[in-house]
Length: 78
Image (cartoon, rainbow, N blue to C red; front, side):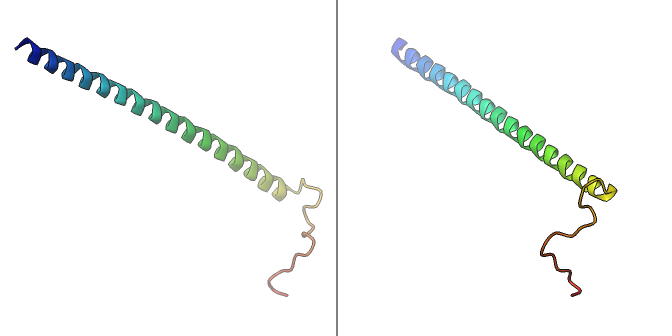
């Protein structure tokens, strides 16, 4: 009878430890994924701000060739 109780206790503790380990691993993976997503969002925000600044700068005519067309440019109505 004692052997059966020891086996049952061993199985219970093994299952408990494995479940805690798996939960910890999942939480760590979620944290890594969340960190990567935040990093990507921050990078996209930087690019968005840079593009917006360039567009606003182009509208204000602050660039040296604001009125010039690029070399080799052909409009659609040619």
